[in-house]
Structure formats: structure tokens, C-alpha cells
Image (spheres, rainbow over the protein chains, first blue to last red):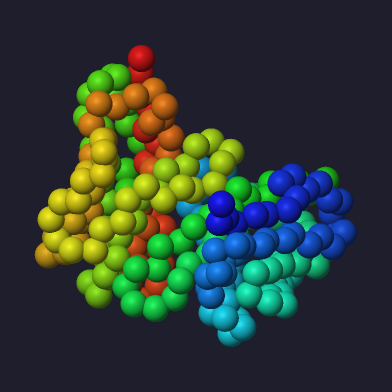
Length: 114
Length: 108
């Protein structure tokens, strides 16, 4: 089945220790998104890629970076995680263009910062 | 004014009743509207999309859109305890924006 896969599902890191979260998709969608979601809040968009074009939300901290080496994979790098970065990180994909833009989410990575 | 607003709930309904979830948005050029269901600790799951004024039905779910009033709703008929979740409204205008979600609790 076509899907969005995120690894790992649970990640524990120490304060200030860099961490990388990964996302892959078999949907062949050209847009990929990274969201941060904290408890009882809406998902907050961090970045998205339209093909290889990178789009950074204005309020995304510099501590967060992303890479998309090819259509199928996208990575979220947190350079120096703080306690406030503990959250669920969601990857989503969509087919760009037109009005539809339905986004399909992976299962998420739960990040804990000690 | 927030871009997409929803009542946070919790909205409690008895099993078998109709659950009505509401969403308003501020961007008048919004074209596409989505409802996602999110169980606790899980990722959002797309359950309905609607693009034109009126009703769209899919099984027990009906989405209703009124662009003049900038209002979109989701009705869940014959609510089941398994429908208990947070329902996120999302709107595509100039940006794709999620509402804060409404927590629904269906009581057996």
C-alpha cells in the first residue's frame, strides 16, 4: 500500500544533542511537509518542499533544518534540542497544484528531550 | 481574529446521536476545506474534503460548506464510541491552516 513512513516512531534525546527524524513516502507526491504538534494544539507547519524548492515558515526556529535528497525522502534535523522541542513531529505529503492539496500524514515521531 | 476557529469542546454526545462539529475561517479566498480525525497519540487522518457550497456525504459523515458565511461543518450520524477523537478543520486559502480541533466524546 502507498504510504507515508516515519522513523523512528519514538525518539529520546538529551538536551542539546542533535537529532534527525526521517520521512519517506511511496505516494510519489511532490510536496512534503514537516509539522510540530504539541499536546492539545493544532499541527504547526515548520517547512515544506515543493519538489526541491524549500519553503521555511517565518516563525520556524533556526534550530530546525530540513533536507530532501530525493522525491521519496525528507529529513528534519534539530541541531540543539531544548525541552520546549519535545513534541510529536508529523510528516505529510500532497500533490501540488490546483485547489485540492489533500495532505496525507505519516504516523509521527514522538520526541522526548531529557 | 484567528484564521480558523473551532470550539475546543469537549463535545459529548450519546451513542447513536448526531454529532455536529463547526468551523469558521477568515480567509475569503479559501478554496478547499478538510476534516481530519485524530485519535490521542496518533497522527491526523483525512476523513472528508469539500470544495463547493452545499453538502457532501460519505457514509455516516456529511460535510457542509457555506462560503458566504465562511462556515464549514461536519455531521457524524449514528455516533459510535470509536468516533471519540479530536476533529481538526483545515482550510486552504493563501496558506494551509489547521484549526485548533474539537474534542468529541461519544458516550456508550
